[in-house]
Length: 305
Image (cartoon, rainbow, N blue to C red):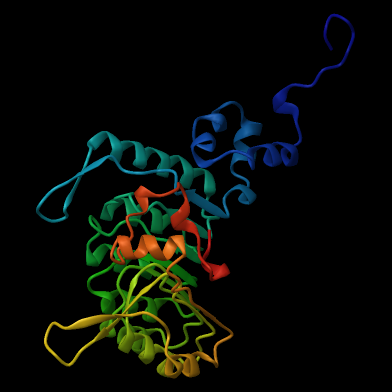
């Protein structure tokens, strides 16, 4: 009660449910900025599972420079330290509740950081992966091994997909959705068929896709329901060595193969801005040039962010 005789309530006396609703309007940087240290009531609210179904770090990018040797990037020490600090606070507050992990494509996590995340997020069902550069094969396999509930992954371009898909096959029995932000060739298609034959949703949007790889998955991935090749550059390899040509439209043979799908999402329109951008970037999108958050879009709704 104040001097005027009016009863007032302190912030820490607010119901936990109300505090949680307020904190749900905060982004990850605000949630980890220290509000959990205000008082015990606020800390209890900050640990509520409703706040931690998704850990969205898509606003967090590494400060880095390109270098000519592996891992081809050098990440500033202070940048690494800041990322580690945010991770430690967030994962401590989340108490293992996180089911969706979203990273920026320009976040260069180390093996140690990825392992730290995987150990504290055993319930993850969906992950949007960071850049691969500093993550070794052993690091990603170790992480996948700790995510038995994984159902969906968005991955950047990868040079050697079989080992990753094999690890998913061994450990993630409910895996069914995949988005690949990079070239899709016959090796990738064969790996999907071998290791993820139950795949239901696949997005290859804004990437280079080889025609023989496309036909292979349409013929062999019998459980596939949704395929997105919007804004892709479709390449047909010629019998002649090193000879390739760009396919301008989907031919009837592919359309017939795709007719069994629930959704076959295609856009190869010269007037489409995204198609123009994909061609300008030669199928390896330079997302940093475009609108903030554009990379999160996807015509396959279950893979959009």
